[in-house]
Image 1 (tube, rainbow, N blue to C red):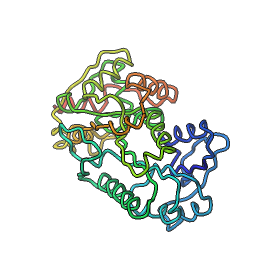
Image 2: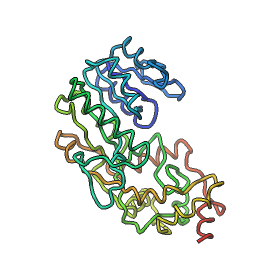
Image 3: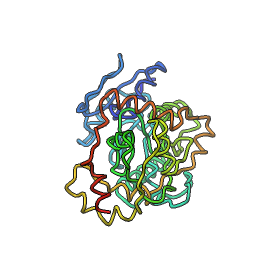
Image 4: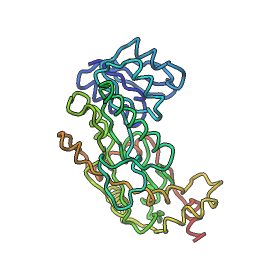
Length: 325
């Protein structure tokens, strides 16, 4: 097939492109051309800015791919250009987000649960899913939506209370305490980046997946304690942690307002837990291949090779937080 990947230059995108090439497809990457990326031999780049009126639609009408994997559709207007340009497209695979479920507390929502996201990104992703469902029902538009949870792996940093970063890994190696939000039982549901990419290429040629929305996450739901314990095992050190009530992060955001690193995610990690029912996708035959320890080891190799783990020291923001406490 002739497949267009919209936004195939970051994190999951390069894995998707490589897998499609290995499968023998003809692949074109549609992006703004602003991110340096080495594309496999034979992959075309189409420079286009979908935020400019009908740039994407014009390009799609010109090239007419058989299928599209869209990794960077964030609002309904992004999708409308695709549907208008190629209403008879063979298959449109959309990267949605498990963030659409909002605050799940102790639930593990399936796709049958109504979205209840309470911030713009989550709301807009839910609106995109609803739009695609409506286009399928009314006009037979062939789509599959994958609600992606927490991808990790080469191409990005690890999740921490500051968001995504890697300095805390050096702290762990040096047995300096890391900051952990809450009581350690909050859930996170990671998926290794290569497994996430395989899901997008897996559903592409499966007619039974058309018109469906699937949760996409790994096989392991980890508590916060288990998440950091997994990283510690890979690093070969015991975890040294300081647990802080998650509300403290929201109440003290002004403390790090002028710091290089922010700790706001410490609140969100617990408030927006991450654990989702992935039964529906598994029933199609899809399986992940990489557990969290193995995926973390691969990521550490990549981070070390790229020199992306910053050195830690006595002046780290963790030390200032501990002092404030």
